[in-house]
Image 1: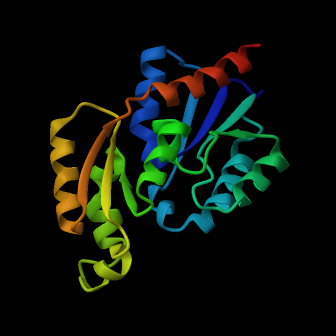
Image 2: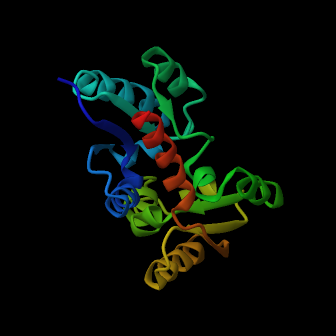
Length: 200
């Protein structure tokens, strides 16, 4: 018999979601993460989410998707409409970490902004340097990042070691460094709204 709730999440949110569930004691919620590498292949996200929904839809009373559109061009929403499943609002995870208004201000102030989260700061070498082949072809760095002017580190935690990593990544890319502390409250509020809906 189906019971509890499932959150299908981007692997880049795993640590944050586990922390949110732990401190709220939402023991009836399970997290199923998809590979964070899908950030580099957003066209694959809709099919991956659909396959996960199909796999678990009979096991849970409720399913929620912890992705924004994330570069799928609306294809993810078409999948979720088919299954009557909700997702985190917004175009990117950066937007639901900062809030829509703050993210719009960043984007309008400098369209050439590269964003890092805690996860991306930790895994920059694997996902960006090696993921884009910059370790093998450093000349590609200018092609990928030549139009960027600054790096904004959206910090979910007060971790000075991560901030130091993020500053180093900005230096590696030759970008101005800006740090903005977001915390997890906005993401937690979104999950809480879902929990209240499930309970009702």
